[in-house]
Image (tube, rainbow, N blue to C red; front, side):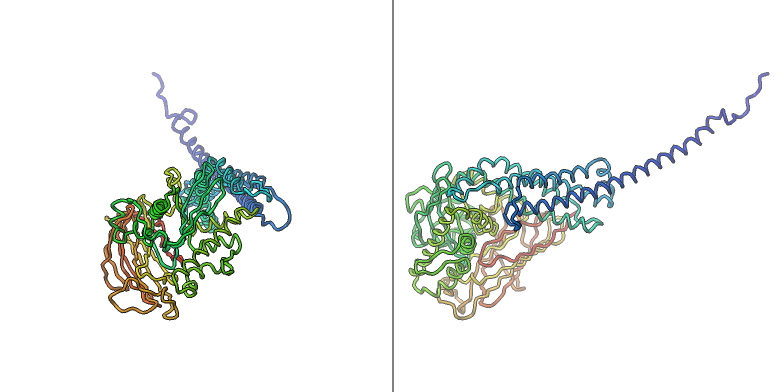
Length: 607
C-alpha cells in the first residue's frame, strides 16, 4: 500500500515560498520609488539652482544689451549688441534645457506642490522664446550701422524695415506665444520669489509683445505709405482737445503733405474755415447715420470726428480735401497739441512768425489756453494756430534731414502712438487691414469681447474741456445664468475757474433754456460696453436717469446729456448685465488734455 503523502515541507511548499518572496519585492519597489523621488528632487534642486544662475546671467546680459543699443553704458567701452544678444540667448537656452525632462515634467503635475515647478519651467521656456526668437530681429534693426554724414536716414530705415518684415512677423508671433505662456502660469505658488519673477516676466511681455506686433506692421506698411513705391499724399489734422470730439478734439488746423522715398514735404496749410462748406459724398452705413446723423458729421467739419472710430473721420477728411482741391488723397492722420509737445521735445524748439519760441513746454498752453486770451478776433487766432502748425512742421522736417536725430524722432512717434495721440488711416485696403489690428489705427474693435470706455463730445461749443478730468471705475460682479453683473462708474470733474476766462472759451453756442454761469460746460457722455451688454439701471449723482442706447460696431453704447457746472463733479453710474468673460476689458481711452484715470477691477472666474 503506497504511503500517504504528508503535508509539504519547507522545500516543497509552493505557498510558503511565494509569501516570503512578495514582501521583499514590495519593499524593494517602495525603496526604489523612494530613491527615485529623492533623486528626482535632488535633480530638480540642482538643475533649478543652475537654471536660476543662467536666468540671472540672462538678466545681466539683457541689461547690458539695452545699454549697448541705447548707448547709455557710460563707461566709454563699446559692446557689440549682436554678441551680447547671442550670449543672452545662450543663457536662456541653457535655463530652458535644465528645466525639461521627465523629473521636471512629473513634478510639475503634482497637485499644489507642482505649482512652483510649473512656474520655473514656464519662466525658463518664455525667457528662451524671448531671447532666442523675439529680441534678435529687434536688436539687429536697432543696432544697424549709421553714418552721421548721411541725410537719408529715414529712407535707409524704410529699406531695412521692408527687408526684415518676415523676421519681424515671426518674432511678433513668438512674442505673442511667450506672453500667452507667461499669462497661463500659476499666479500664486508657495514660493514668493517665484511669484515676483512671474509677475516681472508678465509685465515685460505685456510691453514687448505689442511692441513687436507694431514693428511687424511697420515693416509691412510704412515703406509703401511713406512713398517707397511712389509718392503718397495725406491730410494731417491737428485736433484741439480743449473742445472734445470722439477721436480726441475739434478738427482745427490741418496740413496736406506728400511722402516720396521717405522724404516728407508739406504742400498746404489750412484751417477749419477752408473746409467748412464742403460736403463730401461719404456713406458710412446705416448704423453710423442712426448714431450720428443728427450731428451732420459729413457736412459739418466741426462734427466730422464725433465717433471714436478714427477711420470714419479719416474717410470724411480725405473726401473733403479731395472734393475741395481735386487732388487724390491716399490717407489721413491726426495729432493734437500734446503730441506736438512730445515731438518738439525730440526736435528742439521752433519759432513763430512773431518771434515767440515754440517749445515742448508751451505749445499746449499756447494753443488751448493763453492763445484765446491773446486774440479776441477769430481770424487772428486762427492765423496764430496756423503759424503754430507751420512752425512745428518746419521743425519736424528739418530734424528728419538732420543726421543723428532720427532715433529720437522715432521714440517720440512711438510714445505719442502709445498715448493714442497719433492716428493713421490708409485708403489702400491691404495697408488699412494691417493697421486696423493695432492702436495706431484708432479703430473701435469690431470683434466680440469685453470693452469699457468713456467718450465725451462737447455740447456747449466752448473750449472748457481743457479743464475736464475723467474717471472710470469698472466693477465686475456676480455671474448669473444670463451674464455677469457689471457696474461702470463714470465721474466728470470740471476744473474750470469760475471767473477770468475769455468769452470765446466760456461761450454757450448751445443756448440752453436754463441759466448758466461762465465756466459751466455741457457734454454728451457715452459709455461703450461689451457686445451684447444690457442696461439694468442708471443714475446721475444717485438719482435715476434715462440714457439713450445704441450700437456701434457691435458694441453697446449708452449716452447721456450732462450739464457740468464750473468747479463741480458729477457721477454717472450704469448697472449692466454683460456676456460672461474671464478677461479684463479692453480700455477705450479717448485722448484729451488729461488722460482718463481708469480703474478696472480684477475679474473673478465664473464656474
